[in-house]
Image 1: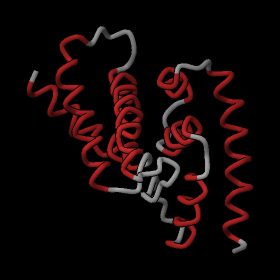
Image 2 (image 1 turned 90 degrees about the vertical axis):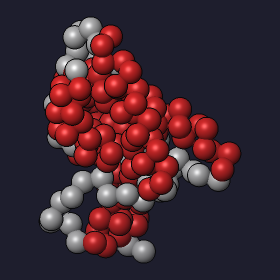
Image 3 (image 1 turned 120 degrees about the vertical axis):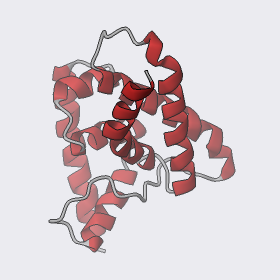
Image 4 (image 1 turned 90 degrees about the horizontal axis):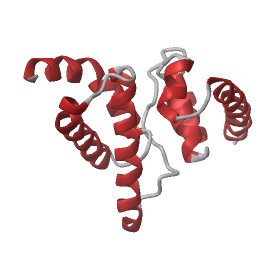
Length: 160
């Protein structure tokens, strides 16, 4: 199991860390959420029932860990609406555009941030639907609305 876990960690850790960063502006908190996620994965791996893809199962653990962690830290003046981390390393975006994108994503509702983060990670819609627990058709509608809302928010920041 130790070797299997190392391979899983090596493969998914960077993506899970980006997801954790998408929840908070504090890298130390993101580090904690990332570590808590992998502890939960380690403890639960023997119980994994293979009813979904392993990566989908790990994303669900990460999302639940982040949601729980952010609730715990809200009292410490950490606002889950402020996402200041890079979500996607896109060379076509300059630093200013990336900052605007991050600020725009931060304005989205928490559930929408989860979805758009997974879209930016280029997860297949079927997997995103499974991770978020909504139907694929509903997901497509949500993604369309999120993109439209994100575009409007982005334009406001861009004009400042």
